[in-house]
Image (cartoon, rainbow, N blue to C red; front, side, top):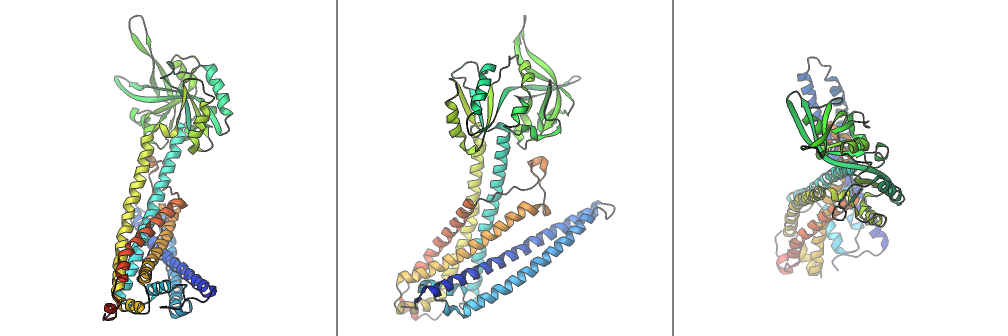
Amino acid sequence: MPATRSSGFGPRLTAFVADLGLLALFLTFGLTCLNIFVQVIVLVVGIFREANNQLGSLSHTVGAPESGRLTTDLVDLGVALVSALVAGVVYWGALRLRRRFMHLFVASSYETFVSKRYLISRQGGRLVSLISVVSVLGVAVGVMALIVVISVMQGFDQTLVKKFMGVFSHIEVRIDSRFLPDTNMPKERWEELLKKIEQVPEVTGVAPILNHQTAVQLTSGTEERREFAMFRGIDPEREKNVTEFLGYVEKGKAIPEDREIVMGAELARRLGVDVGDKVVVIGKIVATANRTAPKTGQMTVAGIFRSGLYDVDDRFVYTTIPTLQRLLLLDDEINGIHIRIKDPERVNEVGKELLDILPYGYGYVTWQMINPQFFEALWIEKVAMFIILLLIVLVAALNIIGTLVMTVVQKTRDIGILKSMGAENSGILKIFLLHGFLIGLLGTSLGTVWGLRLCRFVQTDIDKIFELPPGVYGLDRLPVVIDPGIIALMAGSAMVICIVASIIPAWQAARLNPVEALRHDG
């Protein structure tokens, strides 16, 4: 046997605990190094902001807050440097002890023992050690980029979906025009449906709505501006339990009164109107003695809302149901019922339950059906970014191949000795596969820790580097959602790539002729 197997459970447990402790110290040291990098960037950005403030002001008063922040950033950088120094000293001390007393921690198999010795031993040349470090850092940077970018994209996705559902509700009950010619619901029918739908266990809110696509125009002297818009008549008391439309108002009042409307910010900008202005809304087309003409009504802009979704802010207008009913010459009729449920992901199951209580010709539309291209684009974008960033890990895996090839070249005599002592090809193969696995494990672990640290920084302190314009994105900071399942998938993908990259060099090492290996001069 090439190496002595452990005679009991104690040495194996001791070796495992020692390796875990060394890994923890390595990750701690790597984390403190990342903190230095982050604090340097924050400090540089702060210096540039201070310079811009000084150039843009006649006095130093404007730059005073930035000066105070620069002092704090310098202190934080000093703390990060001291922490990295302490962590580095502790880590290198523990590594030296592990090397010195490695013979006391005999692993359960000689393959594991030899592969770990190749990883932490200083023998073999500085070049191999440097390439090993580069390989670990390459994997770490790739995994870190994956975690940060996908977490931010996940945050944006969930924020957009939340805004989307805040506008369109979870489920909307409508009349299918293929079965019934009149898509408007009489008052007796929709009031009865409201009571029935409220009894469904998953339902948390129900509200009647009246949708109508029409035109709104502003007449100013001889100049006329007209824009098409989607009008929505709502019951404010019920609607606040279903959507968040009323909470998006940024100017004026959220609840319109008779002959008042609340308009999207982009639509108001294109029309050139503000709170208190009068607009003309085109209603139902009616026939007169000589011709047909649309019914129009003059309404006051009571408020302006901004949902964060451009299409909504550019096209939507809401008012009360009675106001829109008079414009359309309807008698207490509506054409939809908004429904909010406990779990938005269960809309299809709840929709099937609703079909049991809905009359003939009635159907439902979920928030996923309203704009499927939007959600499909979000999914494709996330998958594409995952694949692109995974290429970084693939490039790092090429470094692992180079590291293992050079290790095989320098350890050729060792391989020959092991084979002459009875080691089989499978054992040699396992040694170098484990070597590649350990490099991947170190890189993936470090990248995961770095990625989580940067996600935390993005959540809390990203404004120290840049600020999002709320008027453009509807957000004042980058949203981050850390999904353990997605992180595990990314880490697992990186590990698989590293292991696959180790196969070719390990296979070449296993095929070495022991006689030729012993004649090697390395």
